[in-house]
Image (tube, rainbow over all chains, first blue to last red; front, side):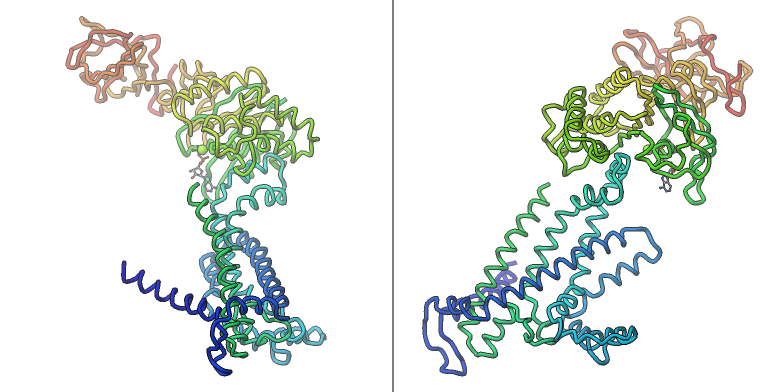
Amino acid sequence: MAPAVFLLLVWMLVPLCMTLWFSLRDYRPLRGGDLGFVGLENFVRFVSSSSFWPAVFTTMLIVGGVLLVSIIFGVLLAMLLDQPMWGQGVVRILVIAPFFVMPTVSALVWKNMFMDPTNGVFAHIWRAFGADPVVWLTDVPILSLIMIVSWQWLPFATLILLTAFQSLDSEQLEAAEMDGAGPLARFFFIALPHLSRAITIVILIQTIFLLAVFAEIFVTTGGAFGTRTLTYLIYQRVLESQNVGLGSAGGVYAIILANIVALFLMRIVGKNLDR
Amino acid sequence: MGRITLDKVRKAFGEVEVIPPLDLTIEDGEFVVFVGPSGCGKSTLLRLIAGLEDVSGGEIRIDGQDATMVPPAKRGLAMVFQSYALYPHMSVRKNIAFPLRMAGMDAAEQERRVKSAADVLNLTDYLDRRPGQLSGGQRQRVAIGRAIVREPAAFLFDEPLSNLDAALRVGMRLEISELHKRLNTTMIYVTHDQVEAMTMADKIVVLRAGHIEQVGSPLELYRTPRNLFVAGFIGSPKMNLIGGAVASAHDAATIGIRPEHIRVSDEAGDWTGTVGVSEHLGSDTFFHVNCEGIPDPLTVRVGGEVDLHYGDRIHLSPDPEHLHRFDAEGLRLP
Ligand SMILES: Nc1ncnc2c1ncn2[C@@H]1O[C@H](COP(=O)(O)OP(=O)(O)O)[C@@H](O)[C@H]1O
Ligand SMILES: [Mg+2]
């Protein structure tokens, strides 16, 4: 075990320490190199830059949008898949499939096959109804990104919610039915409370990963049209502006944020195991 | 009011006919127990009455009204499930009030009914707890509370005591019987335990493979079982069933004699045998006696403290008044 732990520590600790180290220095590789310690100046500059708050806002929009879509459709899909039906196994595998497609690939497929304003599937559909095709990535860039990322994360949400649904005691639903609860009341009073823990877990796990969404933005809009998230801003600071110190400070913020979410996640999962 | 009539009710799951056409009338205020071995269709029959399963044929009438197509909530019946089926995220109070809330009853009346149910069931101190924080017996009472607040035309119980330990079961059995006496509402109670059936029922319905084998009061079933199945099922310990030459001597294919209806003697008797294993209960002792000419050991009940030992030779005689005779089809002979 010891070698594995050692490897893991090195693997994680070296980049972490380097990020912390650079965040305290004014380091611009192509413009003067390492210019020495600057204290917390990078941290102050990162949050006071004019692109910071828009990036926070964009991040929240994308994370929130994807969460909303994947939870709502995840619950609906899970309910559908919970019904006994022909070819259940195959359908379930198909539903899970998008999860195994690399983010870069799925973003490219969406960009070129679906959202392309001349040759995309959507454009053809729009024209078939006599409408002008939407130029997705320029006109509604955030919505487009939410669609692409949701497509990738919907299977995960569906899978977790489906297992939660399957653990719902059918006698509870029948008892509620005899107690006079209609289908909607049964959903809101019995099924949804039963799913609440699973939904919270989905929200927390997805949030951690959604905060780091990068490839989808990189291959579609390249951060243009107001799609610059925090992660993307950090990337631009480091690689496009060649300001490693400033980018590292952003990275440290991101680490703190992800850890706060992870803390909640651990507590909820821990409680779940205790029961 | 709660008079329930089943008219040629039938149920099939796909190709499998679980309940062949069946007629049954349950009178208002009666405590009816459906009893039978596991898998004989008791739960299915109860769920048909509740409306949780659709009948494949026939008609269900409640108080004379055709209820065959009426959804479960509108039948005015309340059910207590084997798993209790409490809502885990609601407090006991909310659990009990749930059917009232669904009926749109005003909050004051809800509170009044929950209070009175909690009083009856000794739940007043637990109203703000979650079901997860209660013992098995308390959960059972919450499930009953949720049923009684609706003031239903009839209660349906599906093996409500099978998740409780033996001591608690005896207590709850009494409580349910008392509840029935107090409310005077029709109750249909499903169990595989013939002791529960005998102790609680006004009327027992013995089921086998979806068929009604016999309907009657506990004592009727005990005294005059209609066939071998009922004879073997009702009564504890089981009736001794003897075939072969011994039965032929009584002009029957099989004779049955209960352990409590066999006389034991040192000197003379119809059958001779050796004492096998004995079970001492204090008030009674049950001996297993291996008799000549009878393949299976006979169970014999003897009053409390008797001096018989393993290997003793004794003589047994069946009490002729309590001898049950059955023909080759297993039906009772007069
Ligand atoms: N939903 C169902 N689908 C198919 N078969 C069922 C279903 N429910 C019950 N059965 C069958 O019906 C028979 C009677 O079941 P049940 O009424 O639960 O018996 P009991 O309650 O007397 O133990 C069993 O053989 C069971 O396998
Ligand atoms: Mg059953």
